[in-house]
Image 1 (cartoon, rainbow, N blue to C red):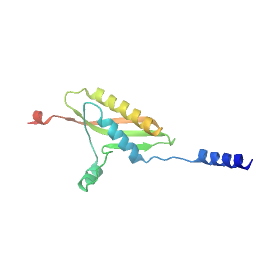
Image 2: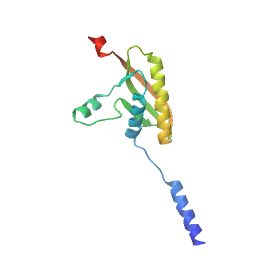
Image 3: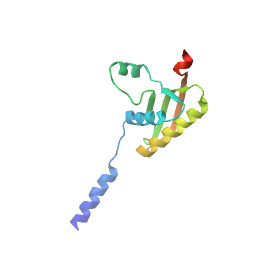
Image 4: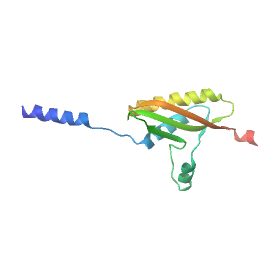
Length: 130
């Protein structure tokens, strides 16, 4: 009898426990997932990302920000990207959104509510720039 009561108490304790995933981890997942989309040039980082690169820090979430809104399980993801010349911008952006959503939700169990993709430039191949 004591054993069952102790077991219920442990189960209730586990039910109240919480797993937190850092926003940086979510941003890393998003960055890796986006980089797998054909036609994506590069993720465009912020000034802070540039400073981190100068200091030797390798950020997988460069150009990506993830925030949890209101409901802790609802995420808002923002990506700043470049698209390679010759690829339809709209198609690449939609594929990035779909891939990022799929990977974050399958890896974390969190619900992605919104994914904003900001296309900041067209990336030309080196031979076309010359």
